[in-house]
Image (tube, rainbow, N blue to C red; front, side, top):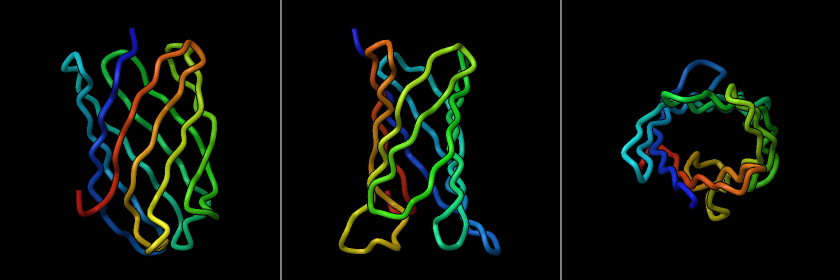
Length: 115
């Protein structure tokens, strides 16, 4: 059985750095939070999501509308994140994504300032 994770991200800006606060509730009602941070030019990104069972983290470069990068979790799970922002306004920090874990489970999420 696959669990689906929905993440809603709210954006905060700091000098030279962007941080999006992630919050989610999965299909079982589990709640968690995390952050996605990256430089002013959307480089050197760091991604994390934490719930009561584990924290998953990864790093990325956001040179295209879609960023694909590996994540490692504290419960020994690993997977691949795919985050996509709209191509119509590539500077907009909003979109959707998935985490595809190597055990076959998947989590879907959305992120951005205007969700």
